[in-house]
Length: 82
Image 1 (spheres, rainbow, N blue to C red):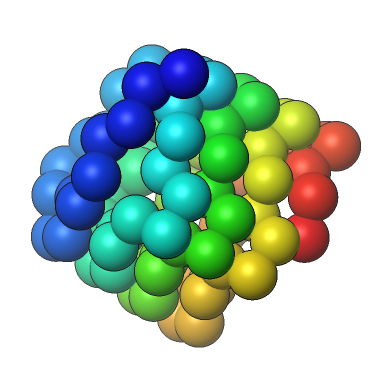
Image 2 (cartoon, one colour; image 1 turned 135 degrees about the vertical axis):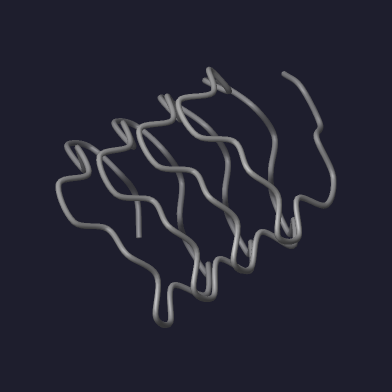
């Protein structure tokens, strides 16, 4: 797995970060629209206000993640763990 650390206010539109270890990462306000997050570990991540619209979250672990004000419109959420 890949550890990517802090993405605060980053732009990762359409990025392929499938299987990445983003646990406890600061992703607040990040642009992850249309990103491939298949099987990514986002447990405990701060996704406050993040744009995750149209992203692939299939099999992603979002347990304990802060999704307040996050935009998940059109995201593929099949098999995600909350």
